[in-house]
Image (cartoon, rainbow, N blue to C red):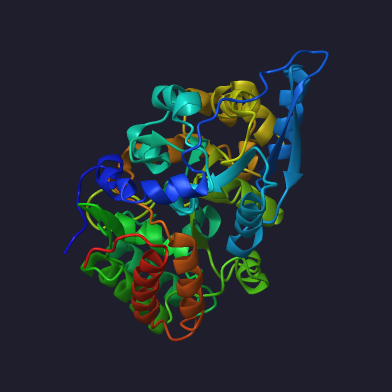
Length: 442
């Protein structure tokens, strides 16, 4: 059975209602007014902020310089499920959490249902409604409550070497059928020396985006229960497509972010990458010797111009923060002010696409497009935002499910037998939802 196709905010309202007692017990319902205001220049309110994302330390500095009534202390934490998220979770449970944290969208329901975040509807709800498109706003809204403020959005796109596409006589593919044909041509034209793509088939986020594009909806709500549908036909289609490409030796399949993956692109053995709007900055940083040779294009599709979304982040307040007014002022500035975007992106290591469309010109102004031969990558990525598949919902146990799936995907690096990882994810998600004390729809 397919999950409900209602918007995620509406569909999850009933499911979130079933965990109201859990939130109350964990403190997630606490909307206590801050016991400190926004301070004064003589004695600013001090708040803490944890993030792993590039540019956030510079952004915090800029905020402190322009807001004498609030002092934000920034701390860098590790990225990843077993890094920063684990650290945040433990800190909240121990009662010594920061006031503000960054979370990727897929982590928001997980943190909410553990009672780790503050219901920020009163402080952030109106601001979020003003600047975030509904497709992004729904990712931080559960049970008609606002739990975080969106910062950026990550439509999937294709990055490719323009010089090697020209050398091998390849047109930029617009469909997945054209993509396979291009992969065959690259292998032949390069006499087996190069492949069109290094797939990174162990990356669950990439799979989620590709499945979303194909029509999959891994999670949803039925009445007051969560529905898991990771092994649906749309996902199977995507898994089989990439299995065939791997087994036919038409793409490489290195572990994502590994030295081997980097070397394949550096040595021109892989001439394209599937990424997202934020990838432009990391590609430029990782492959500086290939400046002027890269471009970005819409992701190939299945016949209709639809794309998935990967990553994207938000700002949230932890449940025990007693400085909500000051924290909200910092979050609102970080997500809606052009100076905040410029300060964060000025280092050039990130190409995050602001969720607020009005901020994209400010973001673009910080990005040196020489690496992409003058191409406006912000325009390319921004044009894909309306094409992001609708009604995608993240689950309350996605973090633990991801760990299970990534371990299984790793076993398929050479074989391309990806489907068992999705089956393992289905079983792990159903068990974790039940173990969390939430209702599971069968």
